[in-house]
Amino acid sequence: MGTDQFPSETHRFPLEARMQPRPIPTTMTTMFEYDYSTAEMDLRRLYENAKRDQWNASKDIPWKEPAPADGRVIADELIDIYGSSLWERLSEAQRVELNRRIAAWRLSTLMYGEQGAMLACSQLVDVVEGADHKFFQATQVMDEARHNEVLDRYITERVGIRYGVPQNERDLFDSILTESRWYLKTIALQLVAETFAVALFKMMGESAKDPVLAEVCKRVLQDESRHMGFGMLSLPRVVAEASESERRELEDYTCFALEKTLTGFFPAEAYQDMGFSPAEMDEIRRYRRETAASNDFAPFRKYFRKDMHSSMVQNLARIGLLGDRVRPRLERLGISLPAR
Image 1 (tube, rainbow, N blue to C red):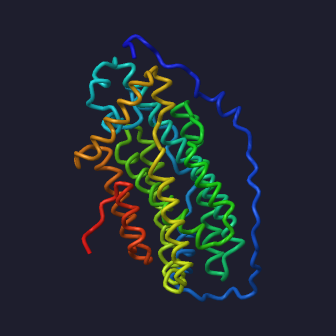
Image 2 (cartoon, helix red, strand yellow):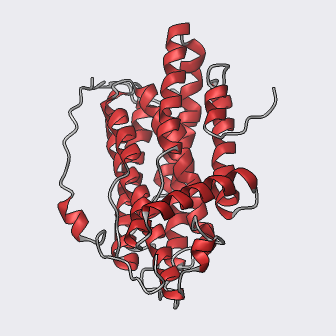
Image 3 (cartoon, rainbow, N blue to C red):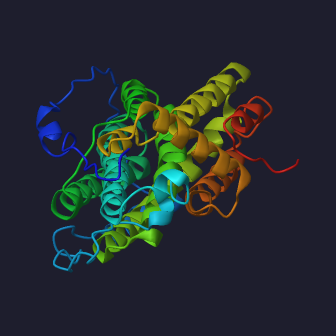
């Protein structure tokens, strides 16, 4: 791209005006409970913690804090092309604008994920059995609504740019929302998608140049740790009691969710809006792959990929899904596995 080019406005808010609500037909069986006593103390404790730790996105975020003077949202080091020849050709104004657009793309992706999680958890309230499960899932619905709200407000007021839903994210949530079995929903949402979101929120928070974004990420992460706890408490028994065919289905659905989550999340629209050519886009993808594969100290790998992959492997092992069929598929996705 030429150094005198300025980005288009293609993906500012008019895009959102064209994104109409999309119906997703579903069939669920609602379980109506009559026994509300505590049956699983650890789950009830998560519910109590959720009640204790509620926060208000309108009042508990310092919205009036001044924005960074230079206009950056995150550290430049977290932009795919940082340090490359493409980066060196950009003017200072273009670097700032690219910073904002990459942040906007990632935050938009997270925002849609929170909407999908809110809908999925509202379904889980219906389909799970036991008051402990239902009560906790009801709190997660509230959490995800708050996350959706706070990200929408941050994008609107502090960034002013938003992007559409990546196809892989849409595919993943279409599958989660149309799946009637609670344990498969939980695997895809709270084992896979939540692990991805936690690593991304952590990276965004630790690299934030805007103190408001840092506080948003900190608050969201407090909630997400509870959400992952639900899967860690509820899934091991399901996996342990599964027949051979059921286990294969659990493994296959886990790998499907991982493949959708770990591939296809590339901010192409942000680079396109900055005027990068198709050839330059290919160069960016190649540079990103090579940097991630060869440098453990590359910021994106240090802050996100390494953390996300290690957490995913640990969680799969804890619930009993790190078996012989899963391991090679994880390795093909670039996830390093510990020796047996």
